[in-house]
Length: 345
Image (cartoon, rainbow, N blue to C red):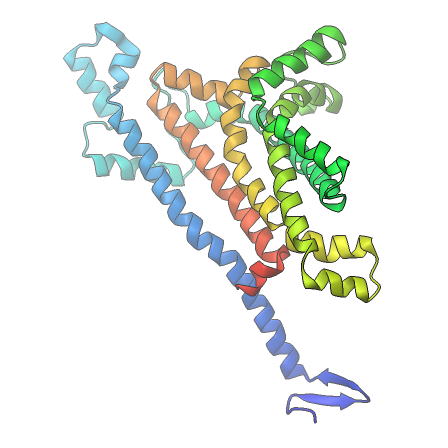
């Protein structure tokens, strides 16, 4: 018998408008919770990260007067620069001033040349993000392909070969891979440049030819990780009862893989992708040095060596924002894609 909110037409129950509105409201509520839950986690992470960043900069004991003037810094010059940069204020006052400026998009000025940190980072982060984004794409595409093939052909020689290959990739550092790539493609084959960077505005191929080698060098560990996690997740999904039921009902292997297995078994690999960005940013220092890229990593290393505390703090803050934002996107994707995540909403 039909309920108060349903009418029966033949053998089909048709929901009345009130029920449809209720279902739509619940759906939007689930979507809202899936978005707000990651925010509830990552906003405190951002606040804590920025506080620790500023605290570490203060604990270094470095002073702009000694960075700019060296041994010629007099007490009057030290006091003047401390007042100029607000370093004569209590710690919490300094932090609030810095954090308020941060919320307005200002990262302060360099102690070395007085140039805006936002400008200095903006000039270099495009290079690093170009390499990191391409490495991310390579890691996802190649890692997913290897992991998917290994899971489909599990226990065969193909599976064992992929497992051995990815294990080898995981132990090869970007520095070594970069040197090998330069020796092969730049020195021997002479098909790609060995160093430098050209903006995308000057052409797709010039840009791609300068970032592909560092991106490949940076992607090795991610390819191996995605392949291993995806294979493990897919093999586990293939062993579930719903796969057997889908097979009995005559669904094609392709449909079973893409609709059921991949969706249920891809969660661990997707979570790993969310954790990969810090490694890509961290590996940029070494990779950019090998390929002569004046990017984000080289700027961070140079600023630390010269004692430019605001520049180092700016680099750390931008890194925190990138990592938090990227993980936020991945968590929202997990809640939208993975059925088990949806059931928890």
